Length: 109
Length: 118
Figure: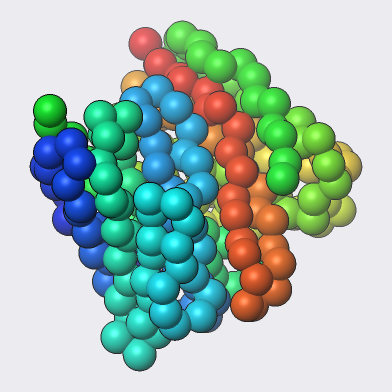
C-alpha cells in the first residue's frame, strides 16, 4: 500500500520559520512534491525533489531523504498570505501523484 | 506549463441524476488525472484518463459510477453517475509535466467543480 503522513495543523507567527514534515511508504517512488492550496482554490505547485538534498525557491525550501523516506517543506519569513493547506505528494509510476492528508498552516500577526 | 479550463465550476444536482465535468488543456498531454477532494480533506485519485484506451481506476472507484472519456490529447470528461449526497465533493482534473527522473515534475490543476447533491 501507499501512505503519507504529515501533521494536520501548524501555527506560527509572521516572520517566523516553519517546517512541515512528511514521511511516506510507497512503491515505485520517483520523487516528492509539495503543493499549496488556499480555501476555494486549486492546488498550486511549490517544489519537487527527485534527488536527495535541499531545493530552494525563494522563501520556500524542500528537502528529501530517500533512505529515510522523509521530506520536509521549510517556509521562511512567514507572511499572512502563507496561511493555507500544504500537501506533500509522492510521484509514482505512471506519473501519478498520491497526496498526503494535508497540513493546515495558520500564520498569526 | 499547462492551463486547464474546467467546467462547470459548481453545480447543485438532484440525487439519482448524473453530471458530466469537462476539462480542456491548452496543450497535448498523454495522461490526464481526475481527483476528488471532500471538504477539508486531501485529494484522492479517481482515475487516469488515457487517450485511445480505457481509463485506469484506483481502488474504490469503478467505471460504472465514474465513466471517463478521452477523445483526444487535450480533452477529457468525468461523469458522476446516479449521484447521492455522498458524492458531494470537489472534483479536479490534472495534468503532470514530467521532465525525467532528475528533472522537475509539476502538476497543473483545473479550478475544480464543486458538486452538491441534494
